[in-house]
Length: 79
Image (cartoon, rainbow, N blue to C red; front, side):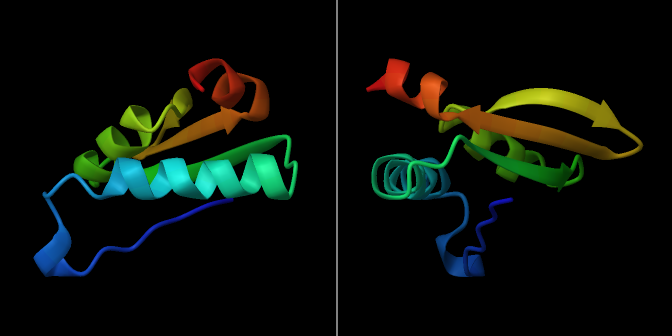
């Protein structure tokens, strides 16, 4: 599981996706993790968009939440 918290003054400035891309780079290059995943409330639509921009894909949406995942193979294809 992965998550990100941005202070209010930094929200809406496009920092989420680049931060997640750096996190993915470390996770997949250094630690060779097979995948990253997150469960978000659909109420956090900006966060969902940030994860999608960073390459995560939606794998399930249920009861006000959505699960997103980024596999190492998917990440490598984006490099």
